[in-house]
Every structure is written in structure tokens, then in C-alpha cells.
Image (cartoon, rainbow, N blue to C red; front, top):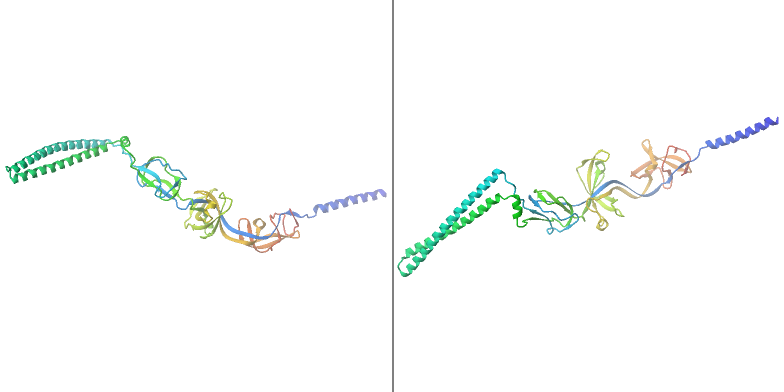
Length: 401
């Protein structure tokens, strides 16, 4: 009888230990979770986008005429003074080659001009002879008139003839000069491009002056060569007058107002820059995103209102980040976006009180990329689950991770 009784006691002890172990094994344990405390603090909603700096007024200097541009020695970043600094020089174009027919016509014109020159020279010689005769005849009649041998009429006729021959000589002499110039003109038609370059004594250049005082932003045409009228040569602007242009989605651009505050960030400096919206373009444009999605974008122009010394290192075409502020408050009851979730048509959150979770409905106000404004549902100082998981349900016990 003692042996069965001992076995019963033994197995009873074993069973009790097993039962106690099972109770401890299946007893609900508090779920580790990140627990936060709702607090008030500053909050803002903004549209964040990349932007690019640009000079407010960029002057593109173009060639006013067709000509031969001399090499532009100025470089990007050089300072220029309005109406004083010569930024480019344009020479006349060299003559072009003649086709066979035009060349034959030009040579015939040269021969004609040479013949006309020879004729003018012969006429000049004839006029010289007649002038000499009239001059001597006038001198002879004048001496005879002094002795009373020649009449007054003879003296007047000889004087008139002398003056007439002198006028004819001057006319023929001018005609000879004209024939010489005509010969030079037709010879110039036959001048080849190589001869025109060699014979040019100096640069009869058109000097282009800087339209404003500023800095060279871009040298579009640097090398020497032929340019046409209207061809852009370089860009000039004043880097102290910068603005930021950001391409917003059209659905975001309609939320922005002219004069709205802007924070310029990630531009390379230690502090953020302040700006304000100057203009919202009334026309959008299509742009393909990096993911290959076609989007409608709108240019928003932003003026920098921070002191120039704080952003003097910025230049034309620099990349920055802009945050266009839509709403802002210094004291807002807020929770992280990671802690709220949709419960039907409303927002909800898991609140924690004395280690037990309860689901609360929330009335949410403003929402930005990090936090949400709490209007109703939680009070300042209450605890909540920051990152709810599938283990967090109504009534479960939690312990702070």
C-alpha cells in the first residue's frame, strides 16, 4: 500500500509543476511598444520642392549685323561696366568667290574702265594744250591792248576764251579722277577673299558694349568666326539680384498665394534663407518625372528677402530646396503621422492608460509630412502608441520598449 501511495504523490507533484508551467507559459504578457506623450509645439504645413536660383534680369547680347566676330576674351564671372566695357568686336565680312560668269563680267568691266581712263587722259592732254594756247593768246592781246594796238573787244574775247579753256580743263581733270575711281571699284569686285584679308590695314570694327553693369554669366559664342545678325553671343546679369524658380505640381500651385512666406533650405549655408512668393505663372507646362510619369508643372518665382551678405555665395543656376509655407502655428497639440490610422471614415489612435491600450477616435486638423494636429480625442500629457503593429489591439497590455 505504501508504494502506490508514493506513486500517486509523485505524479501529483509532477502534474502540479506541469500545470503551473503551463499557466505561466500561456499567461498574456505585456506587448513591448514605443510609447509617446502628446505635447504641444510649433507646427507648419508647407509644399516642399526643389528650386533653382537665377538672376532676375538676364541680358542676352546678340550680334546686330552679320560680320566676322573676333574671339571674345571675357570669361564667365568677369565684371563689366555699363556702356564702358567692350565685350565683343565684329569686323566686316570678307569678300566671297565669284562664279565664272560673274568673274568674266567683272574682267570686262575692268577693261572698259581702263579704256575710259585712257580716253580721259587723252582728253586731259587736249584740254591742257588748248588751255596753254588760250593763256598765251590772252597774255599777247593784253600786251597789245596796253600799247593801243588791240581793241577792248579783242581783250575781252581772249580773256573769255582763256577762262573757258580753264573750266574745260578742270572738268576733264575731274572726269579723269572719276575714271580712276571707277577702275578701282571694278578691280575690287575681282578681289579674292585672301587678298581682302591681306590688304585690310586695320580693324574697322563694330564694338559691342555691356548693356548693364554686372557679371558675365555665359559666353555663348567664344571663338572667332562668322556670325549672322541676331546670333546670341553672351549673357550678362547682376548676381546680387537673385530669385528662385521652383516647378510645382499644378495641384500644389493652386494652394500658393502671392506674398506667401518661403523657407530656402539645403543651399549650402548654415542657416535657412527667407523668401516670399513673387509670381505664380498662369500657364503650366508638361514635364516627365524621373519615374517616367508626365506631370503638369507651374513655375513659381520666389524673391530672397534675407540680407545679401547671408547668401552672397549663391550664384546663377544653383540648386536649392524651398518650403512654401501654407499654414503655421507656434502652439499646436500634435502627434506623429506614424501613430494614427484610419478607422472607417475617421482617424484613430491607440491611447495607453496604466499599461492598457484603448482605441480613441481623433478629430484631425492640419497634416504635414511628419505630424498631425489633434483637435479632439487626446489631451496634452496622455500616452499613445507611436508605431502600432498587428499585436496592438483594444485592451492589450503594453510595456514601453
